[in-house]
Every structure is written in C-alpha cells, then in structure tokens.
Amino acid sequence: MLANPIRPVTACSSNHPRLTGILLTLSLALAGWAVSLIPGPSKLGPLACALLLAAAYRHRFGYPHALGAGVRFSSGTLLRAAIVLFGLKLDIVELLRQGLPLLLRSGASVAFSLVAVFAIGRLLRADRKWIALLAIGTAICGAAAIAAAAPLLRSKDEDTAISAGLIAVIGTVFATAYTLMLPWLPLSPESYGIWSGLTLHEIAHVAMAAAPGGPDALADGLLAKLCRVALLVPVCLAIAGAAKLRSLRGGDRTGGWDSEQDWKAEEDGQAGNEAGYQASAMSGDKTCDRNRAAGGGFKFPWFLVGFIAASLFGSYALPALLPDPKPRLHELSYATTLLLGMAMAGLGLNVSLRDLRSRALRPLAAMLIASVLLSALTYWSL
Image 1 (cartoon, helix red, strand yellow):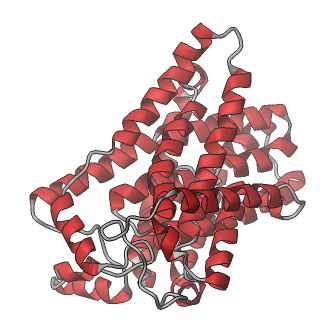
Image 2: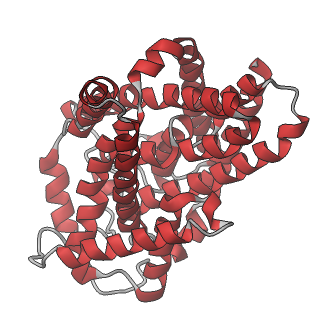
C-alpha cells in the first residue's frame, strides 16, 4: 500500500521536467555517501545507505509523484549507465593471467547459489520475483548484479530496491562474521581470501573481510570475486534468452510472479496474464503498464554489451593510452558509485516499508540459508 494515496505521475501522462527528481536522487546519494563514512554505517557502504535514506524519505514524506519522471530516470537510465561503468572493475588481463583456475570454482559457486536460493525459496513459498533477484545477487556481485538483472526480469523498482537492501545487510553480517572468525580459522591467507571471494556478496564485503588476512588474502579474494563478476554477462544473457523464448511463445509478458498466490496459480497451470499488472509507485497508471507490457516484447540488454566494452577498454585500451591507468580508474570508480547511489536512491523511493514487513521474511530466510550453505561447502572444499 502506498504511503500517499494520490496516484503517481507516470511516463505516459506526465510532462513535468526531470531535473528536480534527478537532483533529489543526487542529494540522497550524496547523503548516503556521507553517512557511509561514519563508523558503523560504513559497513553497509554508500549504496545501501542511499537506498535506506530514500526508503526513509518515502516513509516520512510519501512518494514524490510530481518528481516521478526524474526518479525513474535515475532508477532506469542512470542505473544502466552505472552498470556499463562497473565493467571497468573487471580486469580481463589479470583474470586470464591468474584467475582461470578460479573460474571453475566460481562457476560452481554461482550455480550452487542460484539453485539453492531458488529451491529454498520455493520450499518457503517466498515471493518469486524477490527470490530471482536475491539468487542472482547472492551468486554474483550483490546489488550490482541485481541492478543488471532487474530490467531483464522486468522487476518493479520496489522489488529491486528491497532485494538490494537485503543483500547489502546480509553481506555485511557475513563479512563481519568472517573477520571475527579469522584468528581461529585453520586457513592460509590465500585460502581465506579465496573463501571470502567465492562466498561474500559484494566486492566491498570481500575487501572488508579479506583485508585483515593480509595483502595475499586481499589479492586472492578480489581475484576470486572478479571471476564471479565475469559470470554476470553469461547469466544475464541466459535470463535474456529465456525472456526471448517466453516472448516468442506468447507467455509471461510482464516478467513474473509477485505473490504467494502466484506460486499456487503456477502449480495449477492457471496463472493469468493479468497477474503481472500490479500498480506501483513507479507507474500508477495500470492501462499505461498494460500497453507497455503488451507492446514492449523482448528488448536486448544492450547495457551488457556496454559492460563488456568497458571491461575491454579498461583492460587493454586504457593501459595503452596511459602509462599508469590506475588513478583514472580509481576516479571513474567514484563516478560509478555516485551513479549507482542515485539509482539506488531512485529505487529506494519506491519502497513501502509498511508492505516490507509482511513480504520480506521468507525471501530473507531463503537467501540466509543458501548463503550459510554456500559458505560452509566452500570452506569444506578448501
């Protein structure tokens, strides 16, 4: 239920300028970044802090309907731009030189995470769209993977935001637990780093947990994590391929299931096309949503091509152009974080905290159980 009963302004009916809404998300992103510098909240990171501040703003003041066009621009266009820039973090040269043996382990980690979260979520009858997002985030690279997969799954902004928030919190808890357990673990620094990189959710979580193990642990942890990030593209392309097949078969046009009743409808073979047309803060006009879903069809995820291009540019072209590209890549990482922060703020503005309490427990439990299993099995394999 929306905090403000006024129907939101939609892209189909609004001619309002976007600038004020974009500036709102920018302000929330900068505020989240500032909060993340404080001891304590720093463990969550700037993206989760921006998302939580935006959700708190929505809870206190309601959804800013008049600024909806700008908010959607941040949660959509800027999100895809940030994913493209995120590709600069993937050093293909380093991956090919040292990470090939880890790719098999990473593939097994990603496959296990996807299967475990989906299987446990089904047993718990959790919200299927949330489970899909959390499975991808757990398997690959947290909020960034969720952000990349959300357009392919046609997830609502609220679902994307909540999934990103949940995975940031759980990842922070696991990273803290790893750090506390480190003195008692019978692992070499290299093995500890690989364990962190293969099991923790965000790159920031891997850095947080592996750094206390020393430079070798940190280097191996980040390398293992990069192997998982490299699998983002094939996983997303697999999702896109499945969506293309559904589109060709005239199946699910809206991207999925949103409630416990949908599980039952799926089992009975009676899930109707109307199940996907749910009103949301992002698009309150149901007719507009229907037209968009019916006419949109399958859209190739071109931002993934941009992700690959950015990876190739950062790995090969930039070193040829600059004697030491690391400072420039470091500066670009700030731009990436800011754009992702604005996107997370835009997504957070669509989160209804009142609805969250009744819907989040089962997906959270599924992700938590799967993460514990992934951590334990990976530790045992080392």
